[in-house]
Every structure is written in structure tokens, then in C-alpha cells.
Image (tube, rainbow, N blue to C red; front, side):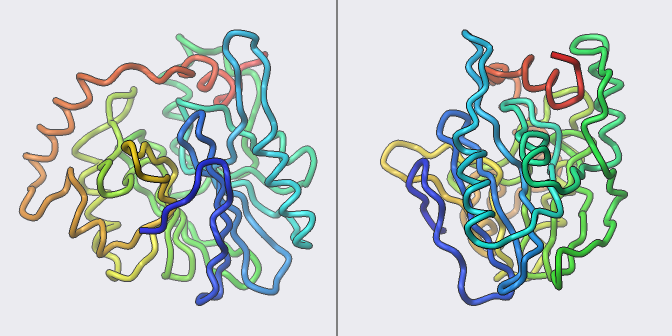
Length: 278
């Protein structure tokens, strides 16, 4: 696993055609990633984070502005703003970045199930925050990189993981670093059983496959981890120890979810990310 100092981008990978630059937001324990093919301008931002202070109602664009600076100074062109799911713990900076750099916002097509389930509590959702809805396992390209939007429901029904050239995957809210475990499934439409099957799909990829995190909640003394491998997850994930079958995982995940508090920014995140007017 590769540690990442809080608030700083990770080093760029140098051994693969795909280049990834990762930025960590310590306030929400979230990663924003910039992806492009080495030597090419087209790029994507995955899970862009916008800071938010609930006391004042003010947004904080410092991380999004750092991403903007990186894209501009690197001579990149923003083609895609990719969301792995509807975030319930932070506001998305996708529209902020689109307004400044262009590009299209993409998310899984089952987001409409999430909007329908939450409209009564957080709606009405008058705005359309997405430019493209990915079907299950839909292929697309970013420059020469071949991407596939893998359907990985469980955390929500609409979760998508973005697989790049069969070598790396942005896993969203499925897996966390091995010493943190797996994502919760107690939001409307979530399913621990579906998550288990999505996790098995990811962990059946080749062991050297690089998995880029959406979140890390590091214990004291450890820096945030932006990525790990399938092999590291299989060997060390605390929620997926060897021999843990589907029924045991569902029971574990359900018991654990019952003890978790709601995310601090739940209401403002869902309202903003699903398209409610300010």
C-alpha cells in the first residue's frame, strides 16, 4: 500500500501507460483522482470533492482549485468528470470543475433509483447534474485509455467502478484500505448481499491490479492510503478474511452498519449531489 500525506497529491505512477494523480481531503477523508494517458492531453477527474462548512453554509474550493491548477499546468484537457456514486458525505465539485474546465459529468444510470428513493426527504430535485448515465459495464475511452464502467452495487444501487486498460480500477465506495475494510450498505437501496458480490467481482481481477480508493479513514499513526492491490486486499482486508462466505459477510456488515452514525454532511451532500436547488 502507498501512503499519502494528508492534503498532498500522491506521486505519479511511472510504470504504466495510465498516469494517476491523487489528492486527499482530510475533512471528509476523501480522494479526488486525475487520470490520463502518459503524454496525452485528455483526462478525467474521478470523485471531485468540494469542501463545505455546514455552520456557515459556505463552500471551500481549495482542493478543487488545486486540481484545476494541476490540470492546467500539466497541459491536460478535461473530458470527463466521473462519479463512482452519489456521495452522502461530501459535496461533489464536478459542476464547479465543469464550469471552469469543461468536460462531461458521468455517473451510473441507476442513479435514478437513488433520486426516486430520496426525493421525498431531500428533494425536489429540479436540476439535472449529470451529462451521461453509464449502463452496466459500458465501455468508453479517455484518449488511448480503454475504460469500462463496472457495475458494483451494494453501497447504493448505482455504484460504478472505473476499470482502466484492465490494469487499475477506481473502486468508489466498495473497498477501503485493508485495515479499514469495506463500505456501509445502510442507505436506501443499499444491500450487503449485493456489495459482497461486487467485492468478489473486484477481487477476482488479477492480483497485481491496482485499486484506487475513494476514502480512507486511517488509524492513528498511519498516513492516508490512495491505492493498494487486489493481492493486498485478499491477504489483509479485515472484512474479507479468508473463508468468509456471503452469509457471514452479510451478517457482519449488517451488524456493523447498525452501529454507524449518519455522515456529518449527509443532508447538504445529498441535496446538492442529486440536483436540489440551493
